[in-house]
Image (cartoon, rainbow over all chains, first blue to last red; front, side):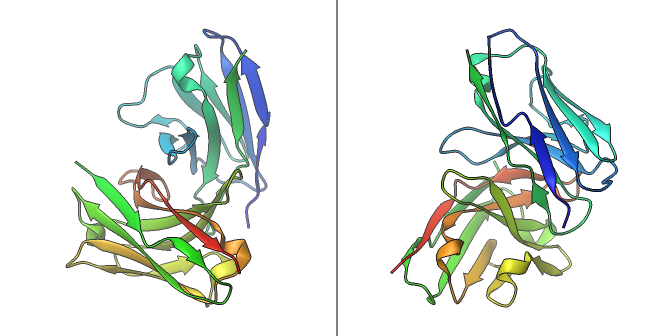
Length: 107
Length: 119
């Protein structure tokens, strides 16, 4: 199985700050990577697919990049409504696997 | 409007069976790939099973031989039959629709149904 790791596991920062989360796959997955946002008590919401493609309706302050084993997710200017846990997920090979999540909070 | 509504969760003893349903509206389950993902309370996300539009089905190793994914096109509903349940199957179970432009990406999710396996 492909193992996904994320860094950091949590972060606390100010409104308006740039947020960067990294995700690493245990083997190359090309660009078959998604990013999801999950708020407490809610299902995950797809933000980015194919490593860098913004899902329809998602604000442009969210972005993703990377290929192979190393990926980055950015929020250009953190908003209060962005408080959530963010997960990466690979879909190169079954079983689909998720990262452990990064909890983003406001300082 | 696309909507997914899961039902069927509950408290079940180890070794028991449950069938989860995921009623879809706004699209056809037969024309999309569909998946089940679970989340242990307070923990992360784990993929469980997937069914493709052509009917192929796959499972994570821990549920192979115990869980069966299926769909009823006439009812536009996805199912997860869960047998020989174990305490470690305790989780919120989500169904989700496959994204048309990212095989393995999921653009609509249900609200989830809680399965608790305990004596």
